[in-house]
Length: 247
Image (cartoon, rainbow, N blue to C red):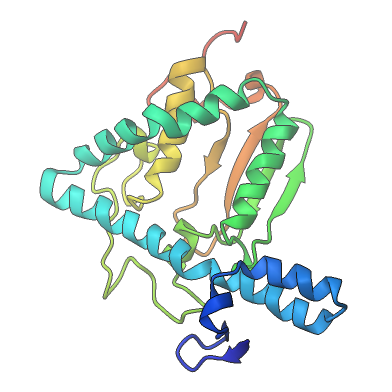
C-alpha cells in the first residue's frame, strides 16, 4: 500500500484502483482500530504530506498571478484586485463571524487554520502562541505561504520565489495595501487588506500582521484583546485614522 517513491522522495500510496480513492485518514483510523499502530503512524504522516503539493501550488500560483497583473496592468491594479476579491466574501465572512466572538475564540480558529497552512519548521504546522496583558500572538517561523516562498522550500529544495526561475514580484511603490512600504511581496499584501477592510467596516482590524522585511525572521499575527489597546501605527500604516472611541 505504502511504497517509497523515487519521484516524490517519500512514502506514496500505491493501492489498487478500488481503494486508492479512499481518504488516507480513514485508513489510519482503520489501522488504529485493528491495532496496527506502526501502519497508522505511517498513514498519518502520509496524510500530512498529501496536503503539500496542492497547497504550495496554489500559493505560488497566486503570487505569480498578482505579479502578472502588476506587470500587465500596473501595480495599482493589484490593490484593486485584492479589494474586489477580499471584500465581497472572504474577509466579509470572517468579519461578520469574528466581531461576535471572544478574542480567544478568534485565536483558536485562526491557530487551527494556520496549523493546516503548514507553518513552522519542516512545514509541520507548528506555531508559537504567546500572550501578554494586551494581546495574543501567533508566531509563524515561517508562515506556510509567504514565508515559505520568500525563504525557499527546504523540503522540496527549491529556491526563493523572489529569484529565478520564479521572479515573483514585490511592490515598487508604497501603498496603504502594502503597509506603506516598498518591496513587499505582492502575495503578502493580502494581509494588509485583511486589516484595511475591517477598519473600514468596524473601525479596527481584527488582527494585525507584524511583517518583517527580513524573510529569515518569523511573521506574527497579533490579536489585541481590546481595540483601544491596538497601537495607532496599525491604522496610519494603511492610511487610516484610529477612532477616538469604539462605542
